[in-house]
Length: 69
Image (tube, rainbow, N blue to C red; front, side, top):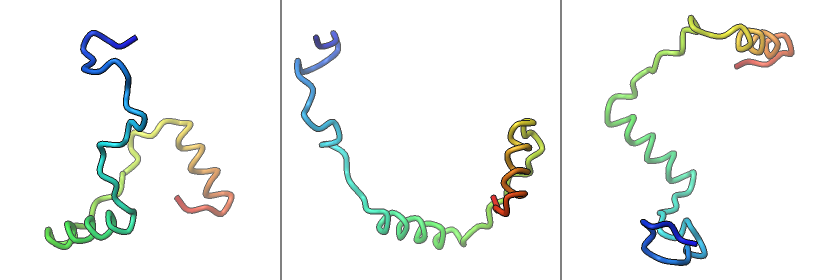
């Protein structure tokens, strides 16, 4: 049953049919171009001042296992 605001009784077979598809390579190129336009700003890392105890424990365990977050 369609909702009251629905324009059609049956949904389309592919719900993504009206979306544009972009490859990862194309998206990465667009992002790089945008960054270059604004001078490649260096974004600050999260300071971590408001991390929960569980997040701190997780990051500590990752580091102990040789990982780098």
